[in-house]
Image (tube, helix red, strand yellow):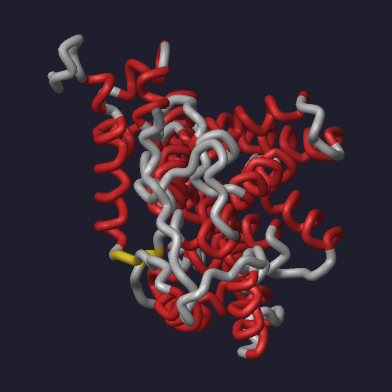
Length: 356
C-alpha cells in the first residue's frame, strides 16, 4: 500500500477533459514565448558571472594576504557563499540558460563545476536531468531515493542500517547533516568517474583533481594543520548548508508520485514544486530557484525572466484549476521539515503502532 500524496487532476477551463497529452502546456508555452521570456540574456549573465568571479578572486586574495590567523574563518564563510553562487551559475549553464549551444554550455559547466568548486558536471547533469523528468517520483527521481534520509513512510518502513537510524529524527538532524553536503558532492563526483554514463571521464577527472589538489595545497601551505582543517570544515559546511537551504524547500513536502502515477507534463511539474516568495535579495540568494515551478516548466529560461513568467504561469494555473503553491522562505523550510518528521513516524513507532 502506498502512502504517496495523491496528485489531483483538474478539468479544462471549458469543463471538458483535454485528451491530447501536453495540450495545456502547449498553450502556456505559447503565452510565454509571445512574452519573449525564452530569449537569452547575455548582458545579465556577463555581469553575473563577472561579479561571482570577482568575489571568488577577492576571497582567495584575502586568504593568501591574511595568512596564519583565525580571521581565516570569516574568509571560509565568505568563500562558502561564493561556492554556492558558483554552483548556481553551473546550474544555469547546464540548463543552457546562458548559451544556446551544447558545447559552450558543457565547457562553461565543467570549468565552473569541476574546476571551480570540485563538483562533477557530468555526474550532476545525469542526476538532475532525471529529477527534472520525474520530480518527486519515488522510483524515478534520484533526489527522493532513500540514501541517508527517507522521503516517504513506505521508504521508512523498508529502511535499514543508517537511514533507519537517522530517519527516526531526521527533521531535527536535517540542517546539521547539510554541513556534510559539500563533502558529499565532492566524494560523489569522484566516485561517479567509474560510472558508465559518464562522458569525457579523463577531462572530468583531471579538472576535479586539479581543483582538489590546488585547494588542499593552498590550505596546508598557507595555514598550520589545525587552522587548515578548521577552514576546510567551515568552508565546506557553509557551502553545504547554503546549497541545501536553496534546493531542499523546492519539492520536499510536496505531493509524491509512485508507480504509474504520471500526470501530464504541466501538472507533474507544478503540483510537485513549491515557489518561495521574496524580492530581489531572495532572487539573488536563491539564484532564481525560488521560482521553482516556472523553472521546472521552462528549464532553459534565463533566471532573470522567471519573475515575469510567474505571473503568467500562476494565472494560467488558476484558469485550469491546477494547484499552485508558494510560501515564504522560512515557511518553506518548516513545511519540508514537517514532512521529514511525518515520514519518520513508522521508525518512531513501537510494535503496537503507537508513536514513542
